[in-house]
Amino acid sequence: MNFGERLKASREKAGLLQKDAAASVNVTSSQLSRYEKNKSDPSPQVLKALAALYGVSTDYLLGLEARYRKPNGTSVVNENIAQYWDNFNELTEEHKKLVHQITVALLDTSRKEK
Image (cartoon, rainbow, N blue to C red; front, side, top):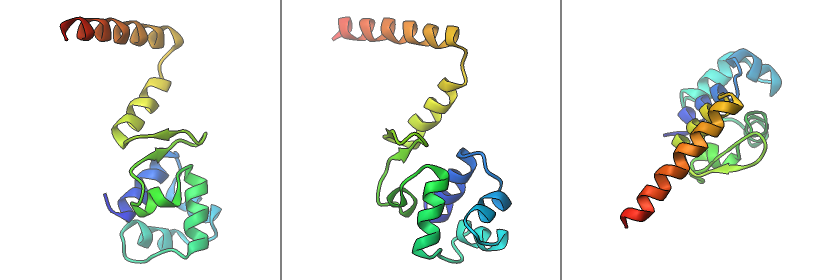
């Protein structure tokens, strides 16, 4: 994933429209669009502001870190796990308990097979 793709994906994961994100960091929507299309690079100040707004590190946006950081600061090893975590958090408490029970059962089975 390149810088623009990471930037756009991070904005979308944060649930922000391009125009709202742009306004939050004091750039135009068209300028943010250029960043997301890799047609222009943000200044260091704008890069820091976007990372803070999206809840990720600047290293993540720049491709120097393969981890996605959740808005609460916790680190997720890759984006598949980040997506899984996002989906899991949308479940009801009852369904979360069911996922936990299934996971424990699968781990027990897997360990017995070794």
